Image (cartoon, rainbow, N blue to C red; front, side):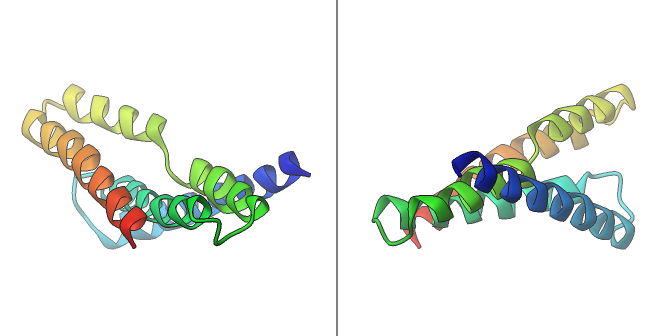
Length: 118
């Protein structure tokens, strides 16, 4: 049952990541990878909230597996983040790459903390 919940959450998370990434990228005409940035920050916030609720035993293990592990695990994306950072470096957009990496890590960690404290 655990694997099924994680897989279902993962499938939903991956689809949400894909479509939200497309939507944000189409709306924002910028070389900054805003879609992945928004996805990782919101995913960190959600995971912080879900983890805190699970830690306080306010949600069942099954909901944590579905949302926390499955959805958030597939919704957020470290591999795309890394690839986009490298693409910015290859395109000689050093300043943008540094801003992307630093703000992604710092803001995502802050969002996770805010979610946990929520």
